[in-house]
Amino acid sequence: MTAGTPGPSVTLSDCDLPPLFRESDQRAVVHQGEAFRAVRVQLVVLLLATAAAMLAERLDSHLPAALAAGLYALTVVIGVRTSRRRARVHWVTDRAVAELLKSLAWQYMVHGGPFHSRVLHPEDRFEEQLEERLRELRKVGWEDVRDGPHVRGAAQITPAMRAVRAKPFEVRRDIYLRDRVMEQHAWYKRRAAQAHRASTYWSAMTAALTLLALVAAVLRATGVISGWDLTGLLSTAAAAGVAWQEMRRHRPVTYAHSLIEQELETLRIAMGTTVTEERWADAVAEAERLVSPQHSDWLGRFGS
Image (cartoon, rainbow, N blue to C red; front, side):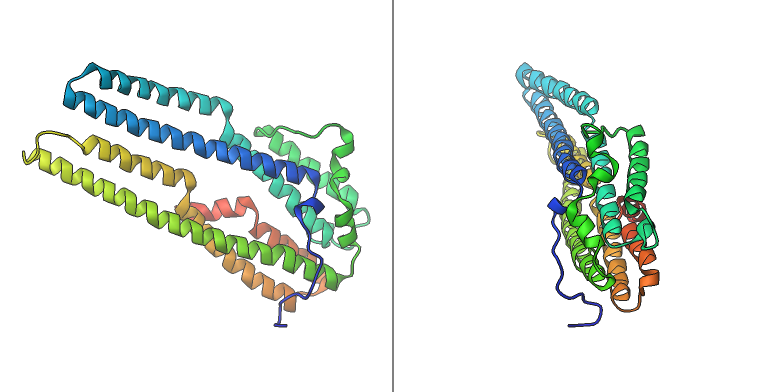
């Protein structure tokens, strides 16, 4: 076994984490899919409307002109509907709640952050931390889906979480390094690679479409071609590609997740070799800060 690599440990699953985490995680996935589909459909309809308008101009026909008008109107309707449903807001807030619950649960289990070994009533501290942060998220649009006081606060602590917290330091350390830090390191590495491939693909696609639009415009301006004017269609397609890439934030995600992956690996080695039990709570808090959505978003601003 190499230095800094934890030994065999209990493998925790989502079922062992707070119920609100599981529910918020599922809701976030649903709302994320809805937000992406709405943007994708709107861009495709806009592209079809531009193609219909080009046909109307070329054929001098009322039918494609009417189709173009209908498609442009549909684009507006989709935009209004998307704004009213607020799928992106629900996606972001539900994801924030899910990550909050997951982070608090891990800190509680392994005596990290505010739940260090010297805390006399960790369940009360857990409830205080959770409800305080949930109040802040309600202000920005989160809808509390919990039904009654029996599922609030410390009621989110599962038996598995209590069992892990009761284990000796060495066992808790191994569980955290294996099931949290190493799992997050692998996730960020995988996501960074996926985002990089997507960024490369869409950048090449939009560059090619822009170049084709330029060629079409030059050929039409010099009189080489006088029939179909593809400049508008190609420009719209290129703009749609740029909009989609901005929606998915491929470049910022690649930059942020690559940095977090490196930081997690450095911290993992330190936590497995040099971090003592006295410094453990602070090290866990630092690990949770690294994997927080706020930290990822902050780093993403520099990779835009």
